[in-house]
Amino acid sequence: MSVIALLSVAPVQEGSMSEEIANAVEVLEGFDVSYETNPMGTVIEAEDVSELFEAVEAAHTAVDGDRVSTVLKIDDKRTVDQSASEKVESVERHLGREASSER
Image (cartoon, rainbow, N blue to C red):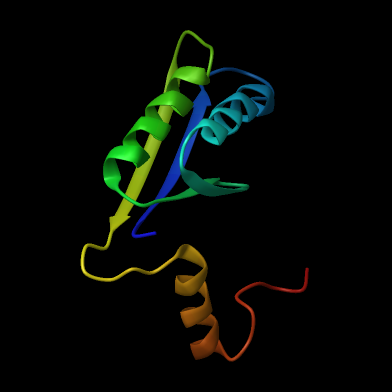
């Protein structure tokens, strides 16, 4: 997979947004992407940018609300095929340990 993105999509509202965020994450199942949700967003990997944009549009549309905020950061490596996990592993090799704390 050569396109990696960080997606954050949420309704602008008071209180918990988790149900609407779950709706956005759930629609990703209908696309040829892999994803991992973390506390700050969802990392998505796709073979090409068009599949990524389709998945992102569906996630954005899946969130109900009068106002929806979406932030998308894309790493489109066009000459190297590197997964998100490989990027983390590279950092961990330099650290000599996992890139997380024991908290």
